[in-house]
Image (tube, rainbow, N blue to C red; front, side):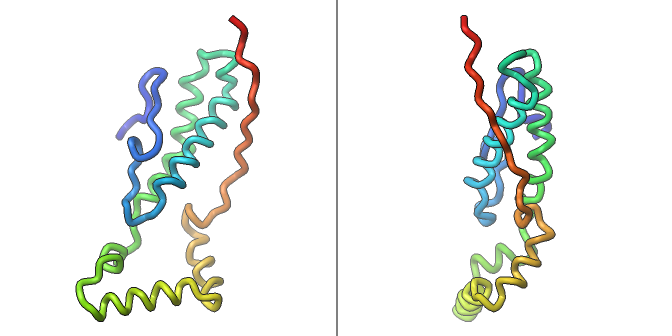
Length: 135
């Protein structure tokens, strides 16, 4: 989708950037998108000057696009690992999931995820609220 906005309307969540159901990131991306949109609106001062809305929406989109592109990429073999076709495949998949959650492999999994958008600690999003102008 070339733009997530049209005038004063902006899309969020799956209506905009539907990640694969296999990524498990739909809710997290929707919440992150809402926080980024609020931060962009606040940073642009849209409450004080509604004419700054296009700038805020552009900043929001620029902040979210790399995160979304990363979320939409499935690692090789992900589909096959979620839907194995044989009894052996099911057993191997279950064993792999148990091993990946094991205490012994946690440091390795953290290192592997550190290079992805999902392994990064997001910057703190601070949103301040102001009273709406009277009138």
